[in-house]
Image 1 (tube, rainbow, N blue to C red):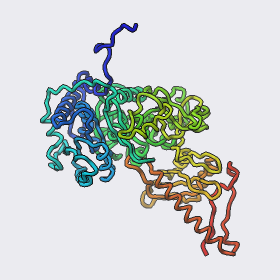
Image 2: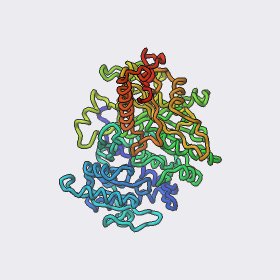
Image 3: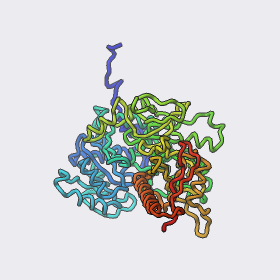
Image 4: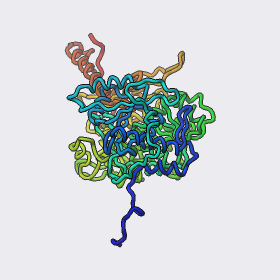
Length: 589
């Protein structure tokens, strides 16, 4: 069979750009994009993307040049997911929540030819450009293009060009060059920097294409969905659904600002069927739960942080159907999805939520997923208890880190991509995240999953947000410290009198004693990254400070010869055989 030919008729390079051409041909009357008063069909979107690609070429943008964009979820950002690679360039979507210094750092590293900026973000872009003026830090400033409000142009200008102007000037007959190498880069995304400095993650046309198909199948997304953009398109290219909605001939409902009011308004107006979001958006939705009436079923794909079962149960009670996934920027978005098993239909609501809180099984892009002991490279037991590091292998994994061969080599050690996340595998093969490797708390030789403790805290009726980190302990090395934000109570309402003692008691009734937080700190709101992830490194600093002041108090009281002021240790019979409660100091002299 070796003599059979590979030719243009039976072999083409894989690229998600083919989804747009197909949508324009197969769904000529289907609405592609909605943004307030603006509507486009798929042929119109294809036409606009080709014109923009033509204009980029006329601006001397060539193969593998980077084009950066700072914009919320608007039609222009959606169109650039096709138009920029149609010009041969690489799309770099920048997190709109970053400050000027962080954006300047990305631009210095990416060195884009063109920088698109939404009109609302022009003031920040001015500061970014001011920071880039130093010629020792960047070879040349990018050409700036402002994106005016498509519904009501404001006339705000930062540079010479405006987005719609580029589309008007573009060649309507522009024919995008065929992708000759599916391994060529299509996108450059920067990690959130929660555990280290942000890195530039490079996606290939092949990886983006296969990841898109895998997510469509894992989510069982039907043809012609109505997709609400609550997930930022800058986040792993909208978990590939920027390309995926085109692949299914769906409708993109763009949302500049995410609020419960806007979510429910657009669901009602446009018959939304699908949306993606991080679990933090669940809290936004639940805050307005009382005003929801006759909500049509909406499918939600969630990830980014393990959602507690209690939170899943609450959101599903409103009419949302949740699918949980797990992924990373380096995996082109979700790499695992909790595919639902029919036999789980017979479970109670709380049990269903427990099953959905697991991260699940690999999407089809992944050739292999495992949880291993890093020192031996052996798979952990499939008992749902033995923890190890999650490793991935497959076509959805990034090409590598831009301009960083050393980090790329470390990430791909022993033929796997090392996620840095700790998990377990259940007997049915479903994987569950337990922590980031650096977030596992080791107390008296026992490994404590902060995620497991947080899940219990979230079941408390007054808890809105919770995070658990390691707090230094004078005897056991580390112990859990919980940071909690309580739900907002209407003026004159009853907060339930939640105190540290009451919260610790609640945990003691629901956790193994060695896992009970030894201290609970209440905050108005937990610190978060620009993508909504809780910044545990900040909380670890706070936890360390709390213990330091506690030790000072202990030292001071121990200097007294008065026995009544000596610190007291209390046993609680924890599994590690030691003192489960933190050292308590009596009042100062």
